[in-house]
Image (cartoon, rainbow, N blue to C red):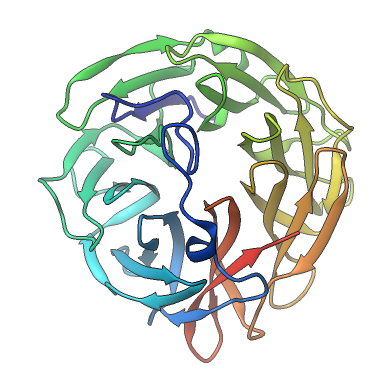
Length: 380
């Protein structure tokens, strides 16, 4: 497994500790106008095949960013009023030669998106500052380095932010940089002995929560820890237990501020070579609230969202042909409810989980006779 280092774009001045939509630093929008109607799953055309998507909540509704088969990064915005979505800025060209992951974050009318691309001498990331109409606010900021992932981080009332992961040393380093390029400092977490990989970081109650895979352990295991605002350990790391004695893959984490709990979702190999999705919830002290829960067999790539107290898991069910988009509702007592996503019977290409006005929303692109993006409100 490769060496990894965590590099955080934290647009820092004025950022509060919570940084989630509807938190103390960002009053929740009125749910009557800012939430999608339950049972409503509008879809819109995105024209061409895409290989990845990132969706975020904005002051007006949602923004969607796609990378297509030509490696072009494009933006789409959707207004939300009285529970209904309308297409606004569409198919806005933002970047080219996007060769890896990307992510976005928003606060009010400010949006930041980071895209890993190969247009530089060394592979690196370009950070774009956008307005609500997806127009560039300033010249993109470029960060060189072999980045392998980008995630939203440090949501706050005044500025959004992103975190990215790059190969540099065997340890995990959390590094902040402001949009003006000023260095906000670095802290090494001291877990080099675990050769960490597949990191995930989110804004959380203590400051941040971070998960990574310990690739030295046999089988590989997921580690979970809480950090303060200065990236020092507050709780953990604790081990998220495997279930079948095989490696865990792509762990993702989420914090529910209302219940002050943390969910981890991952998939792992089975003795027959299949893949199964699991999830587990931890309390504020990182004590497990129940044993790892099997979400579904023959499933991969889970992602998480929260309604503030419970969790929603989006994942691909791969036993069928074509693959099927599925969701699961997981409560803090371990109650699990599974349902299929709205669909035209096509092939799901990519998906994102997003939160707005205390509501979890599944956003995914499906290809059949056309290529469409679905927005599905996830309600208990």
